[in-house]
Image (tube, rainbow, N blue to C red; front, side):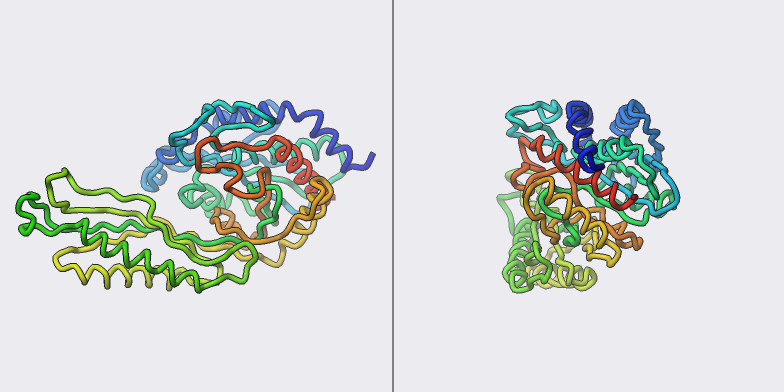
Length: 407
């Protein structure tokens, strides 16, 4: 048997164990917000110890976590040293958006139905806690002489931008790999992604009794004026197209609105939060300046209101670094062999914390266990799920890739 065949056979023989590992990870909630994620790190470290993997626990100081808007974060690093050579990091995030309504399966049950595993983070991205861990175990089952090292990075704030996850590990010089693979889906190798700007806009007016509205200033009507101006930008954004395959054009979304005090009161304050996706060709500084200008001009058309703008998140886009070529070639080669079809290298309209590795000069790609599209997995929606065949095959692809790069 070739090493690749031995890897495949090991994954098949231990796949039930891999699925049980993923089920245990799903059963510990990591809703973010509120972001009390240290218990999941503790459970993950305990499970990893059962495989003989010692997980270093790196708790982020509580003051930093609370200032960030979360409750607890402990990041994990597992270091597997094989010899002199490059270090390859495998990163997946355990934090998730809350489950919401509409589930037909327990969001924390890890239930298996029709060859799929259901639960929040079953696809994004606790699945790659499993695929990456078992890929390393499959690699080590070869007992081959390897050149280099592997690190597992399991972090807990991707939903908030990654600054307290990979960003914190890198800033504190706890890791500096030469290459990295981050959690992704099985049918594409992602080499570039969008950036994201999130802002909180608060419109202040003056409360008044609804029977005498002229004595107040309606913050909601002022907010509507601003919202209409912002949404009008989407028509312009469609004319700005990216040259990166898989990425189309910028987009602005308002995902949360709150305000007012009662039905019979003219609202004195309205707050909304916007999300502006930036294609790799855009300048974040110019994008933010333009949004602030649009808001100011719209607010000026409604006398009496004042506006506060607060930046919540600025996640830069990711562009391919030249050194990622060995990763791209190895993953594409093995994915085509395992999945039986060509796997493209492309961009994605998502943003991820992989950009933080790229900003530190570490070439990387996004690849892991998942379907062809986010939509198919129901990620961030009810009944998120993962096809177990994709988990099995992605684990083989990652293990084979590690064998190539460390051989």
